[in-house]
Image (spheres, rainbow, N blue to C red):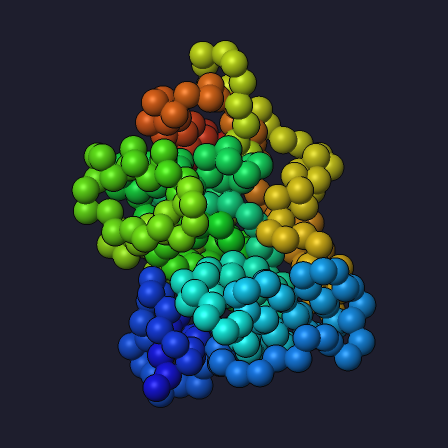
Length: 315
């Protein structure tokens, strides 16, 4: 039996059920990506990059996760999975929709940022930053304030037919550490979750997940300080490009793919056309709703400022 799903504006056909995906309404059209189970050889014929865990050639990516599975990703169209004996299916799915899917997005010349994204009235807002800085937690709190979740962990950016930079909707799943999950579930008992690691929970947000691509508005780098106030700093010039590549999802994968040139061009466009700021806030989880309110006011202020500038130019 085959299961059909949609994510990142792609139609998937999978050999096993993948909870959290938007199920396809029209399963008559051919899928963009096939996910299958079968034997996968432990080595590529001629890899240009080879590490203990993955190998990359121009159009193939081989990932090996000990005691879980081997994943072969080909041409951005196929993911073959060879699970180890007695492997936990939850972990097989976890690496499928993390590292393996990230490689597939690279092969399709999409720009995958390691962050979380929400849909706002002004466009898509992406939160990036080092591991543990609170990207998913902040997006989850925007959900509590009525916003739609676009993506968590891997945010894919591309262009639409009109040339606009857009963020593609992923799937309504979010990874939260234990303390963030406990705070969220305390105020939102309807949260559906499953523990997938010692200190991580996988949260389903099917009721508030955007199903459409959204024009990219801004990228916010989250960082901490010891002060009590929230500070916003504009990121300018070459630092924008540096920030993008510092926050790529699995950036080491990129070097071996044929799509590298197209992705570099896309990065340049993102750096030149997108608002990029650093949000420096106190490391106090009890004040995360203050950050939500602060960003809402900043987005509204910048929107009206931009609208006023455009009106002046037309006049």
